[in-house]
Length: 492
Image (cartoon, rainbow, N blue to C red):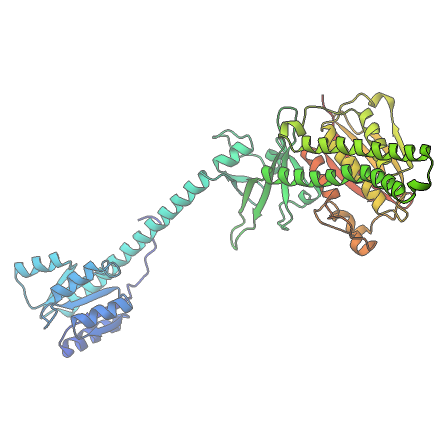
């Protein structure tokens, strides 16, 4: 009985059934002073209709009635799923053993014999109501226990990690999936904060939105296990349910969104690469063919040959780029190889990309001893990142001819910082925290340009975060222009 609180009085609705109006009035006058609500019925069918409309807490049922007698009414009550649990007291002038047996077989809970003792009747009604409330409370407790058991089973077998956090970020509970995600043994004590546990395995991404943890501001937060030579990255979305009133506990969900993130990143990468790879060779092909189409009749053979060579070179490059695209569409193992570009490769990639975009002024500062160090991302990813940053500098420069400075420096034993600055207009400070978001286009209001889909810097952030690095953007403190800093891990 633990956990059940009974009310001080057993007030309830009582349905009186008797074909004698005087008996109904006597019983009603007897029970109403006790605080009960009394409903009267002059026959069995009326009683059943009233009971179905509003099930009472107790039925006092006369046995000897014309038409449908009390035994029949009682059996009908017990046969109906909505009425079967209602206690029934049979009121009868029959005091023989056979009638009582027949009444109990019909489903009666108690008998009162006419003429009845008023004190005894009141006592029996109160007792039955009290027991009925016990039964209801026990049934409710069983339902709650069953629902709780189903909920616990669902949580324990969930594909999502579920934790309950206290006000100090201390986990009170972690389901088996959460323990697996956080590399916790099944029976390991939860004696550290969630952030302490998470940081042992994952990188908190983006860092700025974790600064105010555990405030729930509906900004997506992720835990990232960086990609390595033996495994691709892993992304977990962290959702925090705010506490309810009077309870300071929070429910935290860890959902694996690796497939969504990597698929989205690959789609963005493919779109970006497709435009870059096809646009440049087509310029040479179409330009050369336009010249030949308009003036070949007046040109000497040397000029025609020279222009044809330019168009042919463009066509050969286009073929190579199409083969590269088809290679990209192959199995993932062919896209994300095990190659780890060196710092020296960064210079080569940047110079080629600058040439593709017609950037005449690119300076690169890097200490010679850094050249052989290997970066913790593939060459393909490096090319995409550098290309997107340089393209942004070109696109938003007033003359589309920025002066680009690149510096590479060692930040610590495990990471390297690649800084890329330009001499463009920069960005309004209020836009800086948002430029890494997909489809965010500060230039729409700032420069009037709406080219592209606004995915370039979002793609850069996804690639760098996937390897455990970080991205930052700021306006140059010394002059106008933007400064993008990519922090990339080094491989051992």
